[in-house]
Image (cartoon, rainbow, N blue to C red):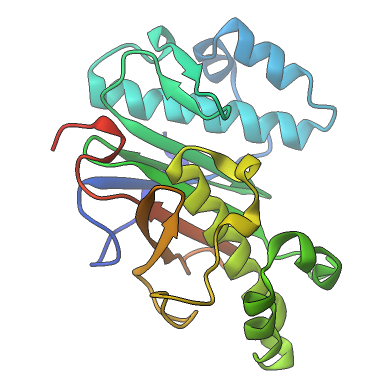
Length: 233
């Protein structure tokens, strides 16, 4: 797993969370493919673009290897199910995990103590973010973006996007709950350049921090209190 590196918390998130960065290669080997279940191989095969197939297959393979190492189980033996919102979970329980991939990067978050969510998005310079802002941003968030210097507005939009997705994924629902369900421009949230802000999501309060390790990408990690998601403290 030489393509994996563990990111250092540095006070940004609790030490009981493992956050891994996966640099995605242009291809994968037979050993990686054989680690996946038949359903996962079938899902990978449905991607039309090779890059999309590689992103899914390698991220799922590395996730299996990390979870297997944590649980001292063969990676191929792990079984998953999806909750009511489609979020994958370990059938044997005991760990909260989440993955996200975009472009040539993927992030994998794992914790035995609390719920976690993660998101990474390539900051596409050609994306007409203004056209998407109504789907993603509340009025207060859009005002905050437009108050940013002109050359920082796209960056600010992606900050909101990744934070909302990470928070909703940590909560367990994902974006199916609606990105407007989270308002990051009011209440107890902190300025967008800060880490460790708190946001209410449905019936719980979660913390989140943005990650600046991936140049040209927006990324965010969200997490709950110890014991959230029914995990042992």
